[in-house]
Image 1 (cartoon, helix red, strand yellow):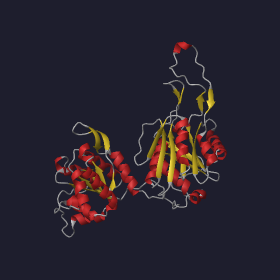
Image 2 (cartoon, one colour):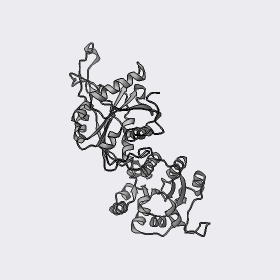
Image 3 (cartoon, helix red, strand yellow):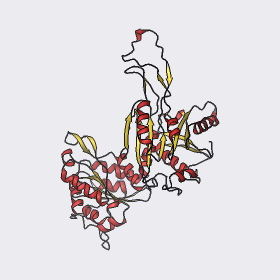
Image 4 (cartoon, one colour):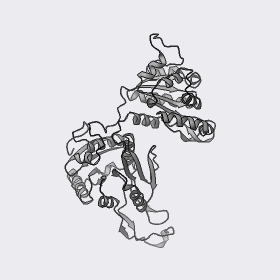
Length: 426
């Protein structure tokens, strides 16, 4: 698969560069400040520990009013720091030691106050002193506060200054706040925070590259409320989008009829094949790498009723016409792009039948690679696929789709065998 490195010479082909981030052994300082959302930090700490991280918690003076040090000591099996001068090892300076020996300093939740201190260079307690002593590039804030505080121009300026210095931010979500109001300011959920941590530790072999991905299931309407579609959830495409984002790419995701979200990604929501085609062609020319993972309707009704079709109108007869083949259209216009299609096939004639039809599509549609999978992969959390090019076929066994996304990229961009790769067929 050397052609992939040739088309994207800026992308690293070193083995493992495209693998999912490995958190085991990473040393994380978790700074917890005085927010009602502090209880979520316990779940974040627990998940980091389960991923193999060595987690050291620093509680601000008022954070202990919301959650106890004992909670974090139990979860992390490490002592918890609450004051500047409590380190039992008097041969080291606590804030310098924690700042310089950590791989990541995650402030979660981060209040208006701690963000202001960090931006202003104030170091009057243990956590703010750690932030003052740490390289900005390894500091990450997860804000949590009332909407009015988050929209305050002073806070916005402080965030801008910290970002300019190299700090990372996980923007808060929208929803019901502790005061009962609705708005932006909620601390992100632990799984979302963990995803941001994984992105932080990812290598960036796709930095500077533009990736276009289609996902989800299109709809073709029969009348205003009825439509033809399929059971694709869009999970595989979204997993690829997240993986490419984590690996440094600028990602555009064209998503059909899925409620799923993807932070840090340019998300274009569409419904029909026509809408998807328009969105694809708008982004295609500037893209370096394209994954066509959407389950696109092959057929559309010749005529669409403007009114709801009544059951007493008699037997319903529908006439269908072929839809535009978006993947074929991209293949015919391809110049410098890497174009990767997906082929969901029935396995009635076994693995060889699935692969034979995938290879036919690879050639017919002028693709660089095609990801073949069985229909049983639809709407599931796990999947198994074959990565097929003109020269090679690799089988990736069943695993969670997010992990599978990284392994697809590894298989495409690395010429050697990875640990996840097996023979051409199971």
